Image (cartoon, rainbow, N blue to C red; front, side, top):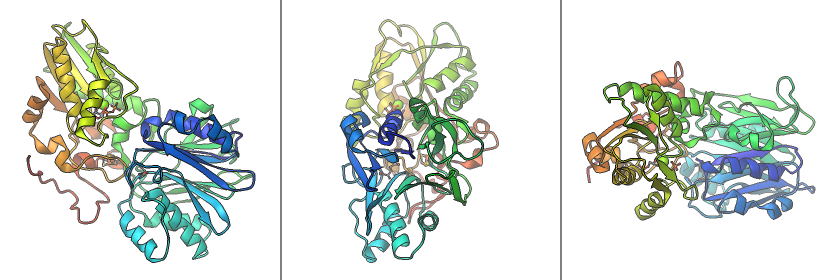
Length: 477
Ligand SMILES: O=P(O)(O)OC[C@H]1O[C@H](OP(=O)(O)OP(=O)(O)O)[C@H](O)[C@@H]1O
Ligand SMILES: NC(=O)CC[C@H](N)C(=O)O
Ligand code: SF4
Ligand SMILES: [Mg+2]
């Protein structure tokens, strides 16, 4: 996950960046930060562990003065969860602190590139991949005399993996994206509508366009896969280059990670989820409808999938589980004990809602099975007569190497148990997943543009030593 933001030449840029980051806080809750360019041309960064409201408070926003800023909310995938690895990274060149970078994604060839740079004498402050991208660009600029945009283009061709990136360099802002467009990335504008590419002034960037409404900006378009955009005062936004490869947009962003009010990869997130629900309902023709049937989401990430299911099935939609919003994502927590505790604290059943009812309990995914095992028990204890679990994604069988911190193959429940065993483990009466083939119908004419590797092991960039398409079962524990 992770979320990025950028604002070019607008009063109170760091405050605007903080507002965008607040709207995309769901993409990263461990640390966050912002960097802004002050009147003397120095780029100053501030980052810390915790949420946007705590780390980027008004005092920090006042200190990060200037009209151009970038920011980041982080779930770690490269480098541990500490302040040093938090983003953005300020990078000093001979002229001083004139560069800062923030990126969403993950690189397959981080280790190889880092070793190469270290051999050339480059010193790293963190173990984070965004710092590597920045230092590579700086090296090609300083050592090889490339312009910043030439350096970005070279780096764009050398990195393998996912990166949606904002880079401040002196009085300019650059936005660039990996050629496959794994992670979402949009451009918007604050100010009156015009034709074509807008003036650079007032241009804003975010991982998801749900970050624009909060600052009164309108969505213009995506940063295209493989594109480099340059923003310079007094000039329109320039698309410096555009070298796309076959798109590999992360389908899990549509299913789970992104906010329903965002449009990403040209698809409305909530409408896609409703279509997934309808697709699941169509497969459930033999599950009899009736007054005692209620369709229940595991809130909030499954709300629209359940809504789509209930509508298609013409069944009642019910919010029978309440969620405590102060407990964050649980599957990403580091230990099983903390994941168990998180799920316990997070949900509570509505009183007098379940007795005697047949429940279709919908979740977006099963990773280890922690959430649903607890929830099925909770719903059963609350009086449900039957519980039919439906999952709005195919079985998760592989790790993600492109910016989502999914566990190893051995930890994934779909690799450890058969369908019947998982159903028994959850304590459900029946269990069904979406299937990989369903993506054809859900993304008409665009199936090939999406990465589905964690569901089908079709990795475009597998890490070294990893056999792509290997579907061999892992050893049962
Ligand atoms: O099978 P598991 O290992 O439990 O993982 C799957 C769960 O993880 C996610 O929820 P999570 O609670 O992490 O976050 P959410 O609140 O965004 O749904 C997802 O929505 C599933 O509910
Ligand atoms: N999930 C992400 O996009 C994380 C970004 C980056 N790899 C980091 O660890 O900071
Ligand atoms: S492997 Fe899964 S989570 Fe990772 S980019 Fe592909 S679809 Fe998304
Ligand atoms: Mg969940």
